[in-house]
Length: 331
Ligand code: CUA
Image 1 (cartoon, rainbow, N blue to C red):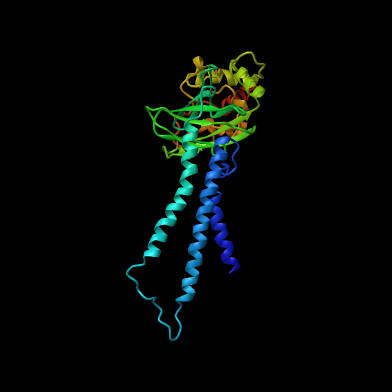
Image 2 (cartoon, rainbow, N blue to C red; image 1 turned 30 degrees about the horizontal axis):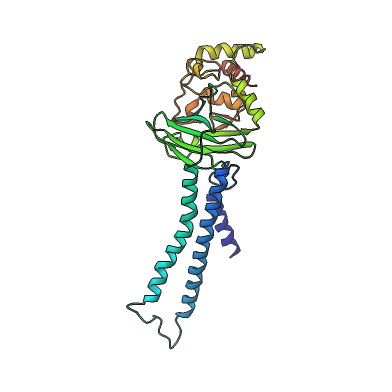
């Protein structure tokens, strides 16, 4: 019996641990908090239903069990008005209890005043994220930086197919649809790093279409913005190795990737301005020089379906130099 229970719980855990680094029920933003309270309400109602159903089930199994001198089938009835009314009205009441706060929350959010909200344009492409700050003229990719306690309206666009923006700890999930602008408001309330991902199957690289949200204090956020406005590829003291990497970058990568976070300087591939400060390579691997090298050598192997071409004719040493140079792009 113990063994069966153990196997069963391991089996269940397998499903619970499915989204490893994504924390779903631990909100750090006002919308996330509201959603969690709605989820809790629906769980309590469902628990009540389950308890009643299981109790009735056990009672019936006992009452109508086969035993000598007892008819196992209950008397068949044609109509029972009382019962019919009960099982029609009860679910209606339960749904009503669930629906009122839910509708209130959805419409309340839609009617919020967005005049003081910060606007950020989010563009999803196969299989990466671009974040533009139009009021600041700054652009970045894969890591969204936000100041604490500031309401943000994300304007969601897609370059190709339908994607879905999802950072459960900050709240909400919203589709990005080609040719249409969807909006999603979030208000982060705690400084920290939160994981997000694309939540709509969008192609081969879908499960690797991850991103990070970094919530900072107002001052740190402003510092980050200032840093993004500087060109990271010049004015730095680089080692011989890194200088060689910079040359290789200019020759092989600069046509697609910008190293300045200014909107006007952006290119078609992910912006790499603060690459050295990022947690991940391509949203998938931990950002270390060996992992970066692995990505540069064979992007398709790390992130299937990505449109990143393999640089041609580079030696082992070239890849090392390139990965060292990219790590210098930071504050
Ligand atoms: Cu983009 Cu799934």
